[in-house]
Image 1 (cartoon, rainbow, N blue to C red):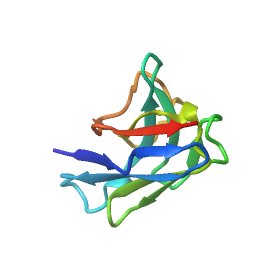
Image 2: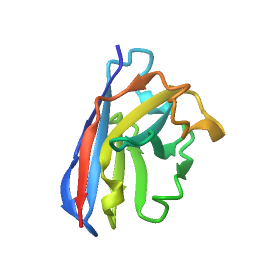
Image 3: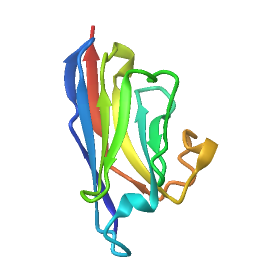
Length: 132
């Protein structure tokens, strides 16, 4: 059974940085999970809809929500089966629980759907709190 485990969340002041990690394990069909799965970071703040933040396709194409473009960077280490999200210039409105999710193949333009359609695996989340 595939497991996604996030880490790296915490509390920072506005303008600070954090790097989130998402480690995938339990995939038995090949050594490299992220060569076959479209990986996305979502976030959800209390009382708000879940939002797709950034994603990376199986081919390495990166996409970002407008709200984080220029500040966040998604990357992956394929041999280590680990996804990252480098978050710079953090703002209080970035405060949320951050989740990684995996979809087999590629999702194209529907990657950020708030319902999470197409995603087979989800992590448990890591909290990011940004104070002003």
